[in-house]
Length: 276
Image 1 (cartoon, helix red, strand yellow):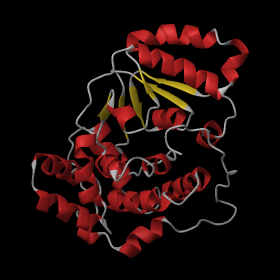
Image 2 (image 1 turned 30 degrees about the horizontal axis):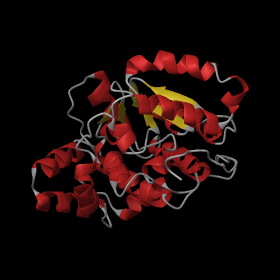
Image 3 (image 1 turned 90 degrees about the horizontal axis):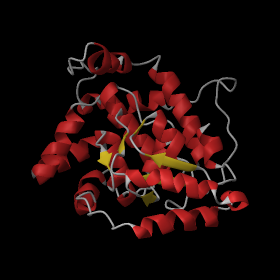
């Protein structure tokens, strides 16, 4: 479905007026127009439950400014409100109370509602009528993201954050220390590779990774237990540290399946305005 959304020929408009996580990100961020509001909350927190950034997220995260996508993938950090537009995950930003008026205006486009240029002009005209929101601190931290996350491996990211040793790096390291070391290394390789992959190929890799994660590791089960069932937030990851997760262990999750088990998708011609 995510692949179909991305190549859908008509304007696909998502109103991100609340939580945009996991599957919710998949059915919205791959579309051509994404309107954020002050109520928007985005995250891909899969490392925290022993999974990986699925639903094709490696594709759009790898195309965010600098190393922001890698930062979001490995930490599960939340973006709120205008931060979604600053990151380019959203194409537009409006106050939540303007959405009903926008919906009426979109319906009033008639046959032009099928034209990307007409929809873009309409949403932009709404955006221009409002006072621009105050800039967040997100982009102010981009140099730190670039310095710490532009590394050859996850261990180097941890070391760089420790060396920086400021309020931002300490908070970032705390987020990473709560996630599955195996998941972090899988996400790192996945997002890196996705920079040179089509969405269809990323989704095929997602399918492959999920298959292996259900058969090789117990971290996903343990993460669900710790975060969602018993809620003790004390997951016992195995291996327990990134240093113990070897390259061979990570490579096992990327092994191709039997030809009859592989997911095969058509290549996508995308209509995303802000990321291409």
